[in-house]
Image (cartoon, rainbow, N blue to C red; front, side):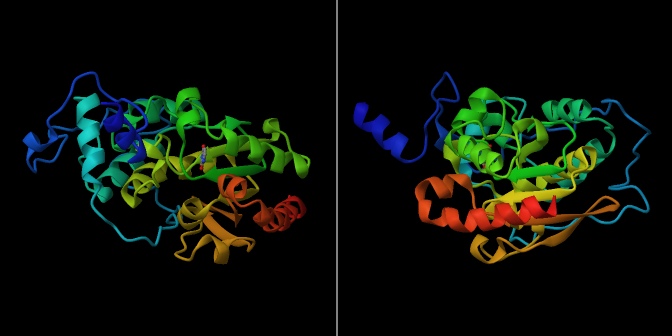
Length: 289
Ligand code: URA
C-alpha cells in the first residue's frame, strides 16, 4: 500500500479529492457533467448583459494563439468524483462565451469573486480546495499575472503565497514595491491537480474573468510571470526566453495596457543564475512605472 501511495505521489497525485474509491474504468467514454447549466446572473449586475459576448464598441480581447486539445481524462474523472454537480463538460468556446456573459455583468472585484465562486465552467474547480482570486491591492498600477495556484495557494485561497510567492515579494521589494501596491493573480483561479500546467481550455474558460479583472483593477502595467502566463497575456506562441523583457501592448476592453513577461520565481528558485535576467526585467518595469 505504501509503495502504491509512493507511486501515486510520484505521478502527481498529491492530494485526496474524494472519500470513496471510484472505478474509473466503469465510466466508459461517457463525458462527465451531463446536465450542466450556467449559473443564473445576478452579481451586482450593471445592466442586462443580454446574449452579446461583449458590448458593442469594445475592442475584441486578445486571443491566445494556442492549440486546442481535449481535457486530460484523469482530470475530468477526478472532477466527477468530488462534485456531482459537474464541471468542465463544455467545449472551450461555450465555456468562454458563458464566462464572458457573466464577467461582463459584474462591476466590482467583489462581484467578480462572487461570480467566480458560482462559475462551474472550469474543471479545475472540482479538484481544488479553494478559489484563489487575488492578493494585494484592489486598485494598483502594477498587476502581476502568474500561471496557476499551487498547493500552498490552494490551501490559503490566495495566489503566490508559497516559496515562489515569497521570492516574488522579494523581487517586488527590490524595486521598491510592497504587496499593498500591487495586484497579484493568475491566468486560472484554481489549482491544477498535481500542479500541472493549465490546459488551453481551462485558461480560456477563466480568460473573460481575467480580462474583467484587469479592467476593474485598471493597472498601468501588466507583468506576466512564466511561460504560460506570458503566452496567455501577450497572445504569443514563443517560449518565455524569447518573450521576456520586451514591452508589448495588450488590448483589454477599450484600453491598451503595456505588458511585459519575465521569468517565473519558481524557475528562479531552481535556476538562480537566471536571476540576472529577471533583474533586467524588473528594472524595466520600475522605469515604466
Ligand atoms: N505559481 C504561480 O504561477 N502562481 C501562484 O499563485 C503560485 C505559484
